[in-house]
Image (cartoon, rainbow, N blue to C red; front, side):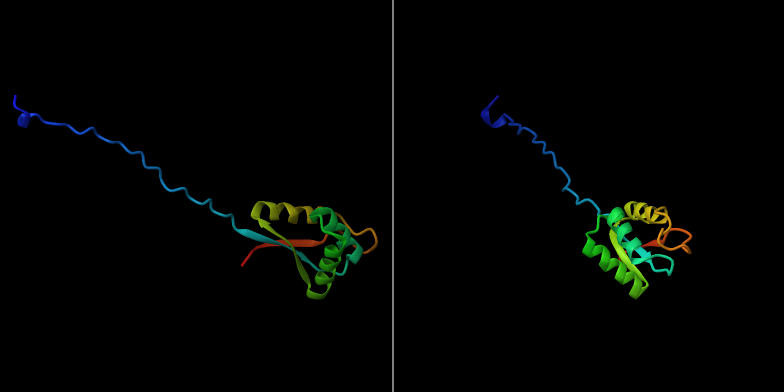
Length: 114
């Protein structure tokens, strides 16, 4: 066979294409909202927010004042599951021992962050 009749085969090149890395989706955020009522003292709100949210005394006092003046306060913004846990902890915290008329825990709710 002549040189011009010889076929030269190119080796096949396989490339492995990895898909571009995807950014993980961030979970929607929810506010834990504490609602005002006349059956809980400032001291109760301060103690509860310190114990349940790890609030400093200054932050706890700020939350107590906001609940009293605005009727509600956002205690925490977090994932839905964590917000539900904190709401449930507020509901289970118990009554205010400083007020005889107090019959139970404060009211809390969660709502999506805008």
